[in-house]
Image (cartoon, rainbow over all chains, first blue to last red; front, side):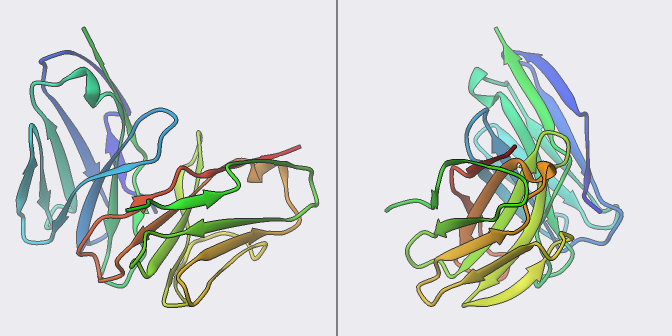
Length: 110
Length: 114
């Protein structure tokens, strides 16, 4: 069963912040985050391993709460270039497949 | 260095036919994964190969098969095509070490089944 993301879609004005959540019904070993722009391949943003760590990538950061089997992606001071569909992807163990979440479509407007 | 290359980029088939898609990973990458992407189902995992061995398999019927060659290049085959197989098929490569890094995706092969 694939991780469930919320919200399904969000529209932001440039400069606003957003949070995208990813929730799994199973215990997780790691969570990846990817962004896919329309007509392009998904591009890796970051990976979080169990341990509750938080990572940052410019103005995009993420957290992973292994006890709650949840991860959140934080987008601050959004830019037009942030528009796209965001996917979380999760592994239950080091040997398991990487299962992608349901996706969140984000649109940043002027 | 060159990215992940998928061929063909676009193809049209009719029901009942079969198709073979090819993926050349980034040089040095030993792991290749395949995903099916559709508007309704998102990215669905098909298979993962590492050093010519299938490491994981998704929940797809036996009509979907794949393999990896000694040079890490991979192919996937779909036999007896159905209308529902119309999708973007994405290949991704990685170094192969357990979850220490990102997947690098190719541009995909867009299959249309008529």
